[in-house]
Image 1 (cartoon, helix red, strand yellow):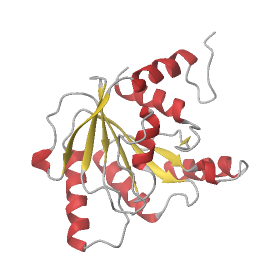
Image 2 (tube, one colour):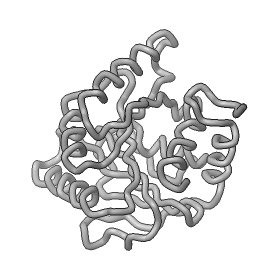
Image 3 (spheres, rainbow, N blue to C red):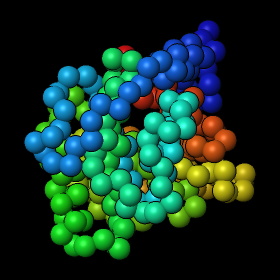
Image 4 (tube, rainbow, N blue to C red):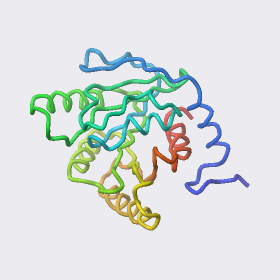
Amino acid sequence: MADNTQDGRTREEIEAARKLFAGPCDFISGAASVESLPPIALPEVAFAGRSNVGKSSLVNALTGRSTLARVSARPGHTRQINFFDLAGRLYLADLPGYGFAQVSKSMKESWQDLASAYLRGRPTLKRICLLIDSRHGVKESDHETMKNLDRAAITYQLILTKTDQLRQAEIPRAIAAAQAAARKHGAAHPEVLPTSSETGFGIPELRAEIVAAAVS
């Protein structure tokens, strides 16, 4: 019988994903326009979410690096789609955050147009990890993004971040609330994964989920 982890992944899957993410991972390009997107080549997994939800920190935690993706305490810092090549097998894409008010309307529209064009035009995009701050839950801006992804028929999975800032008893409630939100959206993956970039909680399971979605 397979030795399964709590989320159903086997120990072998967890270890294979760990080895992949421990391999070379290089920044390849930052796309600020549709024309500057890298050529379609490898399977891709994208990370999306509200500004300051912890996308860059999560990419760093997944790859075991502290500076691969730039982390800023200032919301709205990521202004382009940053692409990383993981061991020549997978692209990771860090999208600009949404829902941050303190930028110009034209700048927000420019970011939104770029993200929409990317999501519509990448046949190699296998999964979107939609990050949700576990302290605040699914917000209206998240539901709007989820509706857009539903219309585009792109599979996405809710990933709870910053669970280290919750009490232990609050984590199951945060998961249940996110699962209830996901059930309202046709393209949402039913499983919600809790994570912490600070403690590493949930990171091995998320690595295995990404590998299963993208390169298995």
